Image 1: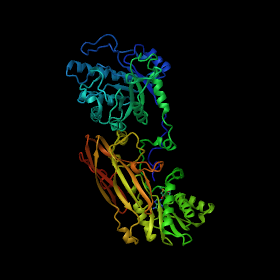
Image 2: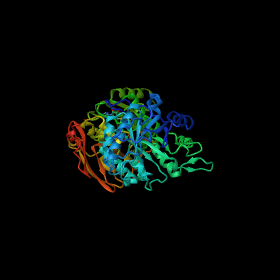
Image 3: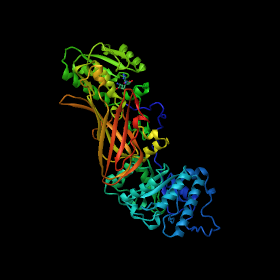
Image 4: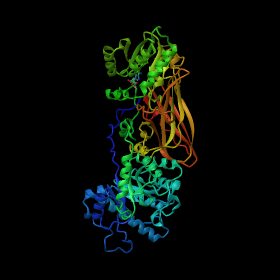
Length: 638
Ligand SMILES: C[S@@+](CC[C@H](N)C(=O)[O-])C[C@H]1O[C@@H](n2cnc3c(N)ncnc32)[C@H](O)[C@@H]1O
């Protein structure tokens, strides 16, 4: 299993705050100080979106004017600027205007306002919606992203509606500003800006929402910084207060999983209580979210946090890691059921004890599960606990000395592949699975242990299959890019994937079954654990492909009438099991998959005497380089 930071990765991150900030955005702000007091004290908002320049200040770069283009920074102290204010660009700016004079004027104003925002140290600048051919807009934004890396830039994206007026479409063409077109325009901007980490989306839920639910899901893979609900999209309840339709509420609940800021936009007189009634309503919706389950609370700090996969043979797990695994409410119960079914099927009550070898016993939870299954089935068991981690062996020996029923257990310190067992086993029980099934070398370890399995003997698990699906997640891709080297793009990561959009259902990749007939060293040496899979995925909605997400499914035991599984693959997922996070398999370069398009990819599992490594490549919609050739960037040592 894989739920821990492997050495060399960062420490476990902090639990993210559950608070969701709610802001207000009004078209004009006459007196900033008063406005902030109104918004934060009366309306109870956490922040305000404020025009950076005076709305009536029409700048002509050819004829500089004497008066200032905006209020002085002395209006607020720096703490207030950087906590309470998000800057908004002037709505008249037209960076792609065919009128050269207007375009130049717009460019100058854009630069001036971004420089002013950087001077004020506001956390974010709201950019107007982008049109589908807004290439000069992208050029200006790209320069701003690089020159002010500490500022977040939020592009307004109306999820369905085109901008309400031409004045709002800074990018020119309006067709690209709604529905799939809005996503395509955003994607084009993001690509032109080289996936800059400080470029994000401010998604606007207008009065109408997209008919296709998947359209909303696709935004879950995007850097969603804010969700805007315009005051005009609200309904009025019997008491005259603003509410959102059920569909809006459901959409918001889905988006809230990503903890974006919420924003109400509209006139300050939208309601007799100003925008305060809307803020209060949003706060109510936020408070109505279901309290996170124990599993969610446990997993939340790991959301989108990349962990290097385990080196199972080189590294020894720590006490705390074993302890965490052992709390899994599903895994051990399934193993116990599997051993129980095996014993009932293959052994008789009162008969000779079944020789059960738990290989990779850790601190003994599978031994305990075996002993419980033995008691429940009335079949006697002679158990061996084989473990290579000397620290876990201390625990195993301690349990033998103190726990009831453990006198039937023999502890064997050492590597299961090298042990010369005194007897042959009826059953091997193991859990050596990684996030992608075979990627913690379960096949190689179990092949080695097979030397001491009786002919006709059994293994729990009997099989495991890795699964893979195309994934859109600019967040994860940017996390990898952050390392600034090729090797990290040729590494696979264990990660609780969160800010991501799996573009279609996963498909099986590599299958392993145990045991095989091989028993002698020579036969076992001849087992071929290399694999290749060429997969083809239909992607209904299209999107930006950043890599793949990997899962596994394992049959622990199938006696013909009942099959026991553990799985992280979504369609068969073992709900509540938390010992494994998915695997992220990145691509060096993101690739646009068109609507109704196809992703074709190849995956290789390579095994040599001393190591195992994976290679992968995209072949459709365009070929990528083969990643990690010869395991040059990442391998698992044997
Ligand atoms: C994922 S842990 C599972 C521990 C325990 N069986 C459980 O289910 O909680 C895998 C264990 O197998 C051990 N292990 C891995 N490869 C091994 C090998 N070749 N020989 C012996 N032990 C091994 C590791 O040290 C670790 O304790």
